[in-house]
Image 1: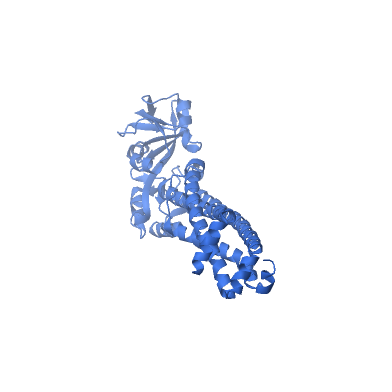
Image 2 (image 1 turned 45 degrees about the horizontal axis):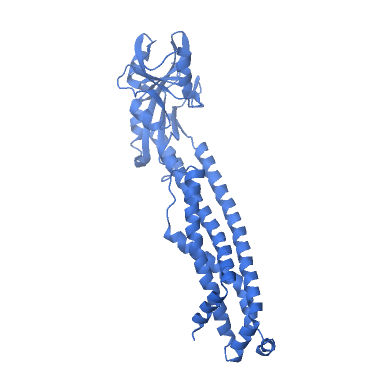
Length: 384
């Protein structure tokens, strides 16, 4: 009879203890798999949002005389402040890493009086601006002509305006095309108009106050892009607005470390269950092991039988843990974390899960196995 057959027969006869070992190891492996899968999905979701949402580089003219604020950053809008040109915005797309630039949105800012209300008018390229501000929710329609506006929620309330309303700005009539849903920042108080139209009204053709840039910094270091823009535009001050994403990345990293710590504890508990179960199994099988030794089985044969049992149980635990962990992480990622990045069935993770279960299971069985192989056949046979 082959040693593997003896091991399989032993597992069939001790289904209860085998099930306990599989359950404990599978829970540990499933925890590790789900933690790794959810963390990977979080990182992928963060990179996707870095790539697709919002500006992460701000290009400003070099000046100390900055009068107003846009998005929490002071910008110059008075005649004493040097401004950038439309050509500067075009030059940004000629840097070495231009393939990593997704949106270049130039702006011209000016304080104006509208219907007796002081407000900040922002001239924008609506096509680029709407690509940049993908979180905007418009009540109304996208502007289709140079005489149309988008009002921030607060600005619309102050001006008592709605989509379709007419407003006079610097002597020119504008129609409100849309009003923004509340954003929760300074955008709520701004008035957005066509860039070329605003430049003409202010007598500043081809001039811009600042340029917002969205760069794909998950594939290219944002600092490198900032340096290249700075070299291309030495008259400008280039700033990376990466604090929010860095904070999110740090949170993901902390979650990953915490997940690994929790997984290690769960695996340790699983290993202790394996150790306890195998010790109990060896105690119950003292006579059986004595018979094996008496009929000529060597110590190495006993070790191979017991390790074969542990290997089968570990492999089964790894596969079950991988399947349960992946399924559970899919639910957690979509329903709890609300991630838009799906969790897939990763074969590589299955190999990792199986190897991890095998490592914990074999290590947990090693001491009981060596102890069983060291049993004196004569002492074991006395209990028959």
